[in-house]
Image 1 (cartoon, rainbow, N blue to C red):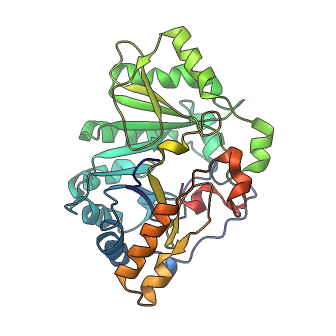
Image 2 (cartoon, helix red, strand yellow; image 1 turned 90 degrees about the vertical axis):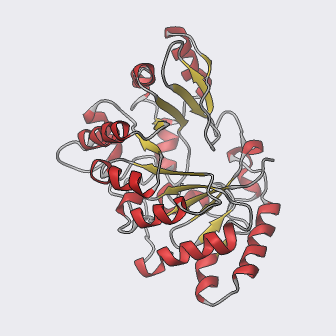
Image 3 (cartoon, rainbow, N blue to C red; image 1 turned 90 degrees about the horizontal axis):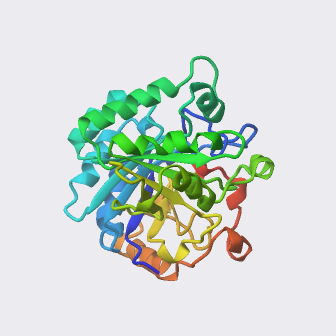
Length: 328
């Protein structure tokens, strides 16, 4: 087991998209009340008084959609300026990114993971939900602006859904050839989307790799992040292609992360709620930071190796909640 030094911080559980794999149609979406979100000051207290002393030095801001959080730029600045911060990144759908990218850069953010599940506006709209004009154009603009500003590495996340976007694998992989963009193919996973998952299933990463290998060839990639992606490179490409294979290739032995939800629950694993702690409740009750730090260290030490194939040994309600609510 790797050292647990990477914290994914959900700033908000709401999103302006309703992606099939994250918030499927008909899902019971019960959002946290705004007064139950961790405030900027509470986040700062937890980081400086609990997580940094417990050994966390790498942070990713997530949602829902983190750019919906009104004080997101200030929160970025708080974390970026902590002397112990070794890495800070954000996962976003990029719909609002074109207008906020410069402010985020000035606040100290340098790395972005952007969801881009299709290059076809109609397919994209079918995946992300909503009516009217496709949101693809706004997302693409956000990607272009972030690239021009200098965010690097710029990673593009693709959740592969059979029969929906799996025909675009080569087109999406080709985005890595002429620009320093890093495309990540993610196996479709049953988190709060059981009906869709049972209908569509998933495609193993090795099959996707073979498609790319047959077209261009593949070599070992030279760009790594804090996550579990296996990274490759099309010969001569400026960027890389990566594969996150939580269904076909267990990577629990490489896990170095925990998750903090928008309403303050510290979750040891995406697929395991055992031992989770409500830090917001403790903080507002006046629990000393040292006591919370010791509880977090105990949870880190006990973090189990658990994956989808072992879900019956530790998960408690994970599959009734959406990825957005968990803070994926």
